[in-house]
Every structure is written in C-alpha cells, then in structure tokens.
Image (cartoon, rainbow, N blue to C red; front, side, top):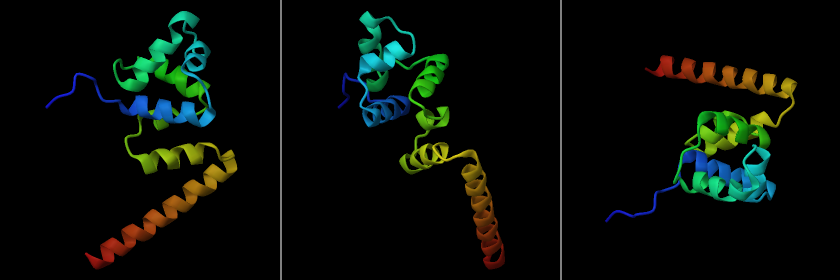
Length: 117
C-alpha cells in the first residue's frame, strides 16, 4: 500500500534535525537564506517533508546559516552525520589531530586485515 505523502529526504531529515537543535522556526531558516517572509515557512516545510528537493545552491545556503558542513545535510548515515557535525565544530588544529588519528587507525586495521587474510 503506497502513501500519498512523500517520505522525508535525507536533506529534509538533516535540515529538521539541525533546525530543531538550534531552536529555530521554519520561517527563520527561510528568511535567513533570503526567502520572502510570506513563503519562507511553507518552502522550508516542503523541503523537510521531502515534498520538494532544494536546489543545491539553496542547500549550500541552508548549510551556511545552520552552521553545518554541506556533507552533513547529504549524509544518509546517522552516525557518520554525527561524526561530520562533531568534527566540524572542532578547532582546525583538533581537526588535524583527529584526521591523523583516523589515518593511523585505518592503517592499523588494514595491516591487521592483510596479516589475517
């Protein structure tokens, strides 16, 4: 049985998640990206519900006003989205250290896999 209502998209889910974290209204997000006040609420609601997919330029604007990396809005894995968001909030030096640690760990895992395989 199919529903007449579309399911939310990844961008819509992430948009709603971040908007609610910030305590922002639909209208605030829309107006912040330059939408007319009279249509901002409806347009952002349609993006969140998956009724419309925002153009990439609009998605870039939303990421900027919500202070998240564009990758966060596109990420379809909840845990990875959380990692992206957390890493983006670190100072640049800490991001470098995190990346270095990840590379070291990946090398260890590859080494373990090649020695057991």
